[in-house]
Structures are given as structure tokens and as C-alpha cells.
Length: 286
Image 1 (cartoon, rainbow, N blue to C red):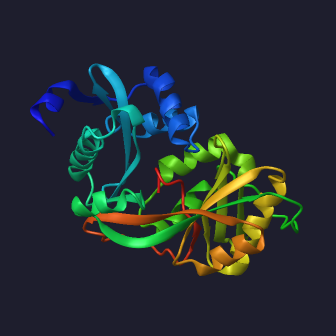
Image 2: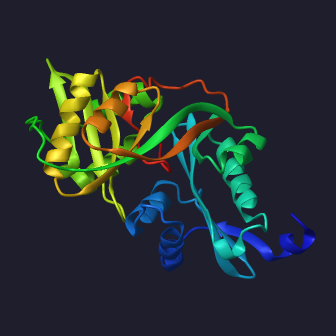
């Protein structure tokens, strides 16, 4: 970045008072997040969410999230189109990486195809491909599955930890508080075999996390969710390591929207078991 830009570009902590700008920048980008998502990012990691300012005006965002001291996540890297080409995205990425490198051993993100070469230059490595699919709820065979209760949440957290690689307790608890009606689980002999959640977005309800021991359980969970959400539009991010998930979604009328690449920086010592992951959490949260 030139000296001129260095003098004009500053990075500060994101605040709830930024909500008008945050709402606008998501709308311009055409992303699915809503205002309550921004509130969650700040609540989850108040010292790790940043705003870039240029000439004292907000022009860019990035969020981070720590899962234990193991995995850090970078998301919501958005630069106002009118401020692109000034190195603002790179400045935000450096702040996010610097923040996380002192707290976790591996940093992850879901890269768009446009962002992939940029992150590659920063040292990120490819883990697997993710396909974003969109579809609609309808009159699917009811699975008669129960909603997740707060009493059951500790078991869900431990089950999810096997798949993801680290505890997502804070995130899962918050999502359950807000969207319990859009959660389901399947249990046999006291053991969790799968669970699914969905959260509201600007254009779509987002399915995920969606974690199961086998395709049959995954199908039951999806049917239960699509049934209760009939008439709504859904989006789900499917890891290509979960081919059964891709097939289930296609059978239910989902179509491909775009592709991402999951990438990591550092020691990927906790990769999780993504053969169990039929739909990831949202890209900004893993």
C-alpha cells in the first residue's frame, strides 16, 4: 500500500453503531446476512471484528471467530465497491490474521473463486471445495423428529465437535436460542446420530450446521426441516467430501448457485470429520 493510502486508511473495532453501514454493504454485495448476524459477530468476538475507514468514512469489514484455542475463522470480508483497488481488503486481512495468530493454531475461511488466488498468496492452503445450493421447502415426507432442547445441547455440542474439530458451544447455543423451531435431531439408544439447524437470511433461510452419521439420518433431518419451512427458499453449503448430501439436495430440487474453497493457514491439527458434515455452518462461522 502506498504512503498516501497508509495515511488515509485506518482500521478500528466494529461497533453496533456501525449497523447502518453494515446493512448497506451487505445489500450492495448481495450477500444473505441480516442485521442480527452482525450483532452476533460482535457478541462472539468483540475484539476481533474490524471496520476499515478511508478518509474517515467506513469502507470495509472483516470478522473473526475463535473456536477454543484451536481454530480461528475469518469471514465477512467486504469492501465498498467505490473503495476497491486501494488495498483495503489486504489491510483488513492482515488485521484479522494478526488477531487470530496469537489465539489459535490454524486459521480457516471459505474463499470465493475470485478470492482464492489472493488467499493463496497469503499462505492459505486448499482443504476442500464447497458448493452452494439453493432450493425451496415443500411437502416432503415428515420425519417426526423432535426439536433440539437446551437440556440436550451439551450432547449436540460434543457430537458436533467430532465433525468440526473444535467446540462451537457459543455459536450453537446462540443459534438455538434464536431459531429453536428450525432445529431437529435424531437419537438412538441415548446417542446422537445427527442434527440440523437453519437460520434466517435476507434472501434465503440458511441450512447448517447439518451433521449426521449416515445418509439415511441426514435425509430424515433435511425432510423435517424442509417440511416445517415449506414455502421458504433455502440455501446450503455442501462440502464435496459429502457426495451423499449433494445428491439429497439435488433430489429435493436444489440447484447449484456458486462454489467456494475452504482454505487454512497454519497447523491443521483438528480437521474434524467432514464425512459427517452434510451442510456446513454459514461461511463466516464455519
